[in-house]
Structure formats: structure tokens, C-alpha cells
Amino acid sequence: MKSTDMTSTLRRTWAEIDLDALSYNYHTIRDYIGRDRKFLGVVKADAYGHGSVHIAKKLQELGADYLAVSSIDEAMELRFHGITMPILILGHTPKEQVDRLICFNITQAVTCEAKAHEYSAEAVKYGGTLKIHIKVDTGMSRLGYICDGDYFQHGVDGIVEACRLPGLEAEGIFTHFAVADEPGEDCRAYTEHQFKLFTDVIAAAEAKWGHRFLLRHCANTGATVYYPETWLDMVRPGLLLYGYGEFAQKLGLRPLMSLKTTVSTIKIYPAGTHISYGGIYTTTKKERIGVVPYGYADGFFRVLSNRCSLMTVDGPAAQRGKICMDMCMIDLTDKTNVDVGSVVEIFGTQQPVEKLAELAGTIPYELICAVSKRVPRYYLEGGDVVAKELLLRM
Ligand SMILES: *Cc1c(COP(=O)(O)O)cnc(C)c1O
Image (tube, rainbow, N blue to C red; front, side, top):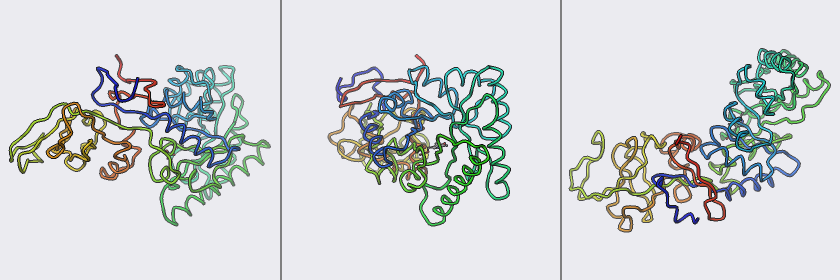
């Protein structure tokens, strides 16, 4: 089926996900980092709103080495849908689930001594080995063994202790940067400090433990593009892979998602008509106003009310009045080629998501993750729809 004639009862608002762009981005990043580094694709939060099953399937087919998610539920979803490649859980998993982690060959981050002991005890009880990656807190101040300053030796000792616990196999070690994607010398210095601390911790831990970590990784999107020294054994980008933001632009990557809707109704109002809740917009002349079925329950940001535009075949149409739960209004007064049924792009190749994010005072991550479960995802390859997914229970 051609992307242009998608007929579906669900044709209301939909997201087109370009799997060719995913392949392109993947190969471009791989070429950039060189063949001898491994590649972990971050597919947490439903692959940043793109649908983790289809993204993971494609990454598996492309030959990516690892995936990362935030929870065991996200990992199990992938395992239940044919993803057999290694998966790392970045966040916490309750100790009661250790048997499932082992059974489904899922790798768990270990972020502190207490969890290392809990996981070890559960793994021994179950009679298996849990693969772990040690998380080092080098300055993100979120998860991980604290290792900075006076904590260095204590942190290293704790890490080595975890590596030696029965039932655990320490395959990797990682840290996360706080400002690798921010400009300026202070941020560079902060990132370099984090990286130096990370490599110092690895050296001290490996010396004491007497083994090497197979996978040392820390490069998120910003570091993958601007800090080649941080690539180590594996890079770990998220946003970059999906093709958004300045770093993706730097590498010439392509955005995966085009979020589209259609004009469902058009009405012509006289001057002085209040549009939508609260009457924050009043027509100043005879105006032709379209209703599009895209509201904050679909992932639109209400804060953008009356402050943004959506892209039509005749160019950007100003959004008018408060954005409602299920729809919003756009000004089609001078858009003579736009009629009921016309396709309108919310963001995508015509209107970059970065622009809407900036208007909303946020980052592209938040807008793509916000695309809600009632928006069907259509996966395109070679111009054809190869899969459709609606995350609603039907
Ligand atoms: C989300 C996340 C990433 C990916 O971050 P991007 O900025 O999207 O590249 C990498 N590592 C960890 C630990 C994360 O939580």
C-alpha cells in the first residue's frame, strides 16, 4: 500500500515512521564511530514515542549490538515480540523479578551496593546468573555508585565487591553525562571531568578485581557526536538515532517521525467571533477556520495555544484559540488549496519538531514522547506502509 492512499477507519491523526531514515541514521552513525565500536540503541519510552517493537526489530535486522530500555516491562514487551538481541535495563528492577531477568536473558544495571546484594541473593536462590552492567555516578547525580572526590575508594570497592558476588556476571560498566549536549566551555570541562573520573574508576576497579569489563560505555547523543574519546567499547545514543536536534543535523541525519492530521471541518465566521474555550482568539475579519482532530490528549501541548502553526499544502496555518483535548482550530482564510480532508503536518519533514519544541519552551524529546497511544503509527519502508500499530487496547 502506498503511503499516499492509507485508507483506514483510524485516519484521524497518525504518525508516519520512516524506517529508511532509521537505517540511514544507523549506518551514518556507525560509519562515524568506526566499525570496531559496538552500538547500543536506546529504545526506552516506546522508542521515544516511535514504537519500540518495530524500531527494535529494525535495529536487530540492521545488526545493532545492544538495546536499552528503562524497565522490565519495556524489556519483556520486546522479548515477547521476537527481539532476541541483548537488552539492558537502565532503571530499577524489583528483586522479585530477577528470575525473569535471567530466564529472558535481560541485562540489569546495578546502581548501588544494596541492589548488588539483593540481585545476587535472588540469582543464587534461582540458580542462575544475572548479567549486569555497573552504573557509575560521575556527576549526573541520579543513579549509580558515587565515586567523585572523597567517595572514590569507597565507590571502587563497592563496584569490585558487586563484580565478585555469586550469581552476578559483570559484563559492562557505564556512566551518564549531564551536559555533554550543552554548549560552552564549562559544560566541556564538566563532561571531561566526568569522563576522566569514569576511566579512573574503571582502571582502579579492574586492577583490584583482576578482570576487564567487556563493555565500557558512556556516550549519549551529545558525546557520540562531539566527544570521540568517550566512545570506548560502545556508544549509547537515543535522540540522535531518531534524527532530531542539532547533533543529528550536524551528522546530516533524517527525522523518523512525521505527525499528520486532516482537516475535519471548515467554517466561515464573521469578524468578532470567539474561537474555542476561553475566547483567547477573536476573528478580526471574515475568517475561514478549520478544525483538526489533534488535541492535548494526542500529545499536543496546550501551552502552544494561539502561538504556533501547523503545515498545510499552502504553507503554515496559524493555530487559533485554546487547544482542546481532542482537537484544535487553524486559520485557513488564505489557504485556498486546503479543504476538508486535506492533510496537515504537525511536525515532520515540512515543519521540524525542534521549532515546535522551542516555541513550547522544551526539548524535542518531550514532544516525540508525548505523541499519545491513540495516535496510530504507520511504518514506512521504500514508500510503502510495512506495518501499522495502534497502542490502544482494542
Ligand atoms: C536516555 C538515556 C540515553 C540516551 O540519551 P540521548 O540524549 O537520547 O542520547 C543514554 N543513556 C542513558 C542512561 C539514558 O537514560
